[in-house]
Length: 174
View 1 (cartoon, rainbow, N blue to C red):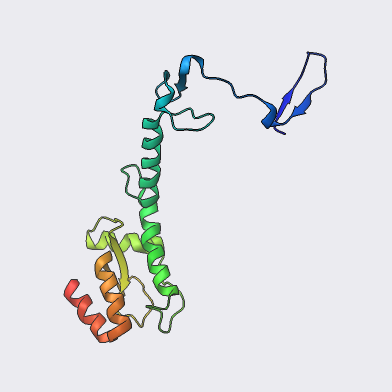
View 2: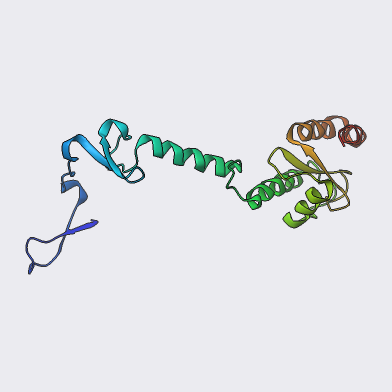
């Protein structure tokens, strides 16, 4: 019961179920696109009872939305990127990959930004922050910036071969 119908001006309003209301037909087989601000043929709209964006604009909006979620669009703020980088470090710590004696991430997102600024690297989703020494909590003095692929290799080396191999690989990459 969403809509209310009245039979006359003085009659009380009565709820009418949506299923009993007939869909409003599109005049002359055309529909108004809110983005184009013009009437277009129905074939240029996605299926559904009432879609008010043509396929072109609906796909454009979806593409921008997905890029923004990944932090890859030009209008995406650096806050989203920093949050993703920090959260990857947090996940590593919670997964006990780098934990080994510490329970918290010793860094904030502001600390992550400082590390990128000190090293002259622009924060991007291709980078990850890892501890230089895996047995110590990751902090400003114990952090390194590596690519996502190198991080995967480091984690695998730490889990299979131990801390010494981890340090060797990290030293070769930085």
